[in-house]
Image (cartoon, rainbow, N blue to C red):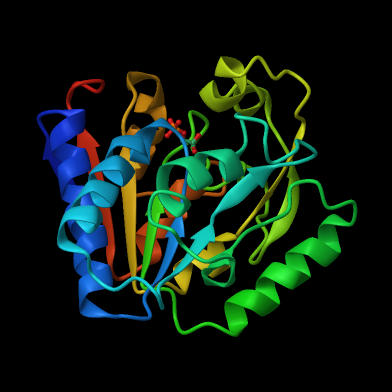
Length: 241
Ligand code: PGA
């Protein structure tokens, strides 16, 4: 089995486990670096993590949070953005200082320059300790969309149809987004630990691919199985095996 898969009886149980891994990461290393996805899959885990941090008060003053990706050309106050999500769910509740947060500016006119800025910011950090990732309905991870060849590092991307109607956009009534900006598979592979959360019955094609033992740019998330320390947490609530 290429991915170390753990099947949870519910979304809540999966979220508890993910929050525990996040907490352990920041407890163990005071300058830990965490790359965070946004969306429905990690939402409850982040809320549990925030609750535990507020109760236990580990020192997070040297922990760095990195935003995995962003929609292009939406202002950060738009509630569809990854920025809005992370500010609301993690950064503001935990009073994370701006200098401890690395984040794509989705509105940057020069996408290439923005990717270079993020690459430089990552290079200045210690190795990424943990990436919390979701899975797209089309098998994407971050906004690494299926393609013949994939970008190694941070890059801008044209979104595919399924991604243009992502729940974050749909719920906010946003129909105008056609591009994204994201860390690349190469960035993610450099992390010590990858945690891939699987929730949503509509992702069963991607799950099947991940569990088939095959790797392909047609399902970018499958490439993560090449990592030595990748964990796939999925729940039965919205996915029946
Ligand atoms: P979701 O999104 O967690 O909201 O399902 C995951 C993704 O599209 O990458």
